Length: 297
Image (cartoon, rainbow, N blue to C red; front, side, top):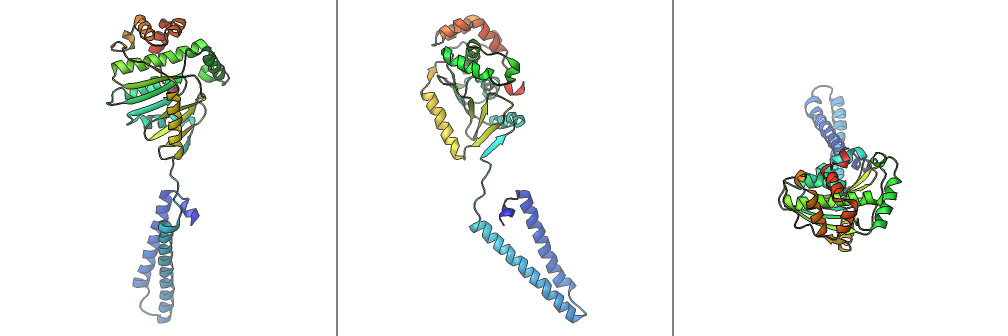
């Protein structure tokens, strides 16, 4: 019985259908075939058939009783490993009707390259973002070393603390532009700790990924007990981080209309003026205009 329970739903349905067909066939044989001459043979065969019918009926009743009252509940797919080739498809599925999105990671490249543009046309969208603090040179340096230790990541790009800071500032700029020009509600926080595991979550599920896009990911639905624990982990990260004021970014039709002066003025109004000056507002703007979805490159 346990082996039957482990069958797929389609196989279980086929098994029940074949059982039903056999049951009906035996009744037909008993009623319409086993009559007329050779009385002894007829009675003998009819008795055998009726015993088979009774056995099948009894087995069916026992099976139904077991499935309804005794069998343990079969777990649904609340936890699933995603092959690298399937990560993009699962992200697209979660984004199909999402109006809330939370992200905790380091750069937020998928967030700025895919999530923000996808959600930009929807109403009442709420987004929480946690990225590493670009002002912390030691933190950025440690993250750069970590990324450089991953073979083949970003086609051999050599990361430095300056390049890490640039990536984070580009994400912040995209969040500010979308908040001002697409009316998205975005709360952005800077964390003093980098985590190799990145978390993207909506109300129905979350996906945990690592920096190496050749590695598998983990999908958790909201009914899995660890979903709430990871949500709490993200909330504590936000609460202990530094919130960045994304307000007052100018209204611009697109990023091509954003100027270096706009970028400088925005970061000067935040706690990121010094790091913007060190990285260069012109570099930040060029990189922001060339953003792509990392899972499609």
